[in-house]
Amino acid sequence: MGLLDMIGPVMVGPSSSHTAGACRLALLARHLLGEKPRRVEFGLHGSFAKTGKGHGTHLALTAGVLGLRPDDERLKESLALAEAEGVEVVFKEVELGDVHPNTVRMVLEGERERLVVTGSSLGGGLVRIFDLDGFEVRITGSAPTLVIRNVDTPGVVARVARVLADDEVNIAHLTVSRKKRGGEAMMSLEMDRPLSDKPLEYLAYLSYILWVRQIPPVMD
View (cartoon, rainbow, N blue to C red):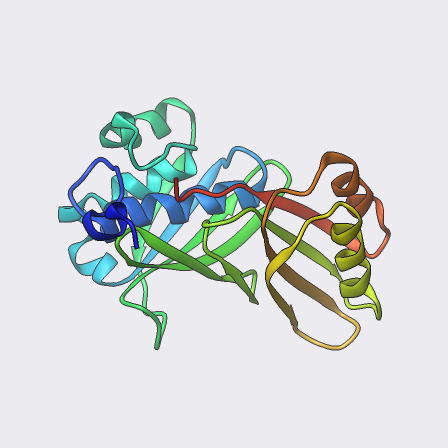
């Protein structure tokens, strides 16, 4: 355990969970979308809904989808920045069931993509995205992460693992989820280092892979 684990992240306050964590969740969602969002709807659950405004959660979430980090002083002006950039931001209170009280469901719409991303701020600035368009994922922002949406075809996981191995990239954690056999599936892979450009392009080229996102760490 290091000093920052005890005193929390470098951030624009006041709260590591409601401010820094919220910003990191939205920043990860922006990376997943892969483009500038045109519209974002934040569904705030539990403590995020009840005390979010007082802790700057609305500002932090907006800053994250604009690509800002928790220590960026512009976080306090994020709503005005979003308006200036033509990004529509909507906040709603939602009930998401038996999940962490600091949970948000983000619906992001860009020019090409629409994603529904759900994640929780776990305290001390730690976060976890656990649902992406109804698929189980594990994205913590603590390591480079590869997220792949694919057709549920035999051998896909093995092929992806081989591509990473050939690039000498080690898998730290792998999550695989599907809605039905032979339908669409999703995998998230936390890695020791980012995958190189050529292997990444190769994966995107494969006919049974629908899209690929490489997500950088957001915990530094």
